[in-house]
Image (cartoon, rainbow, N blue to C red; front, top):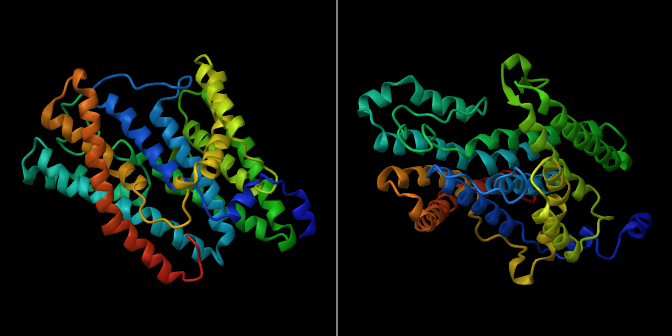
Length: 376
């Protein structure tokens, strides 16, 4: 313990954790709004903004989600008393809200906006395939019969859900790495996990560069190949890099010092980088540090140790079908973009609030009841 204290710097993340205040909820909310803003261009047939290199604003929002997940999910694993405990916490957080959103899109929204009759819509195998495949996370189906087929962003019901199966896979990888690390003596388990995560980051970056030269990057994942479940390797490697960079920042929390000045300097550097691979790599290296610094160095009024409400997940789940529905109903032109965006954000926040109150928060209470010793 004395050695650990000697290694711990005055501005380390570990000391910040001890203060029981962070802005992760606010950061996730901002990330969700990045996605909404970026999609607001796409649903009108406009090019999405690219703040850094070839990366869209919405993609940056998704990367922020993966960084925060990597940090918090690693903590969740280390706080869990068993595999069952960890798995229960993760599934109860991500799945109830997700499956309700899938069913609402297929069984409530779809029949209202489809060009088919109700009988044709409900008898079409694609309707039930949408629910079955998405519910199982085996792939992502984004089409429903006759739904949004004539819009600028055609045949897309919920263009945000596809990333969640990658998120779930990251949870599984943390579980597997944690189990491997637990085979080592407990005094060395943290070390083993840390080294494993470093290897995963390097592997993810390597895959990101290597598969970039391939035309077909869809491939089965080891241990899942017999099921026929496939993932895009380029996407998996990129998401994995951000996720495990976040995980590493948690693992090295005793040593990493968070400086607002450094984080601001990195933001400025990213803003002035010319478009290209250098900017994309720079984003991968800088964004995790920026996100975690913002989480612990944000003004006190943005930091909270007691989560009262979290709209970020609900906004992510419902914003895209809300955006598509508004375009379907009102056919706004490019000159109406700003007004449309305000309406999209307002309605998405209302839907997210309902999701939080009616689905997500009850699921969290269930999680607390099942795993009374665990911390979210």
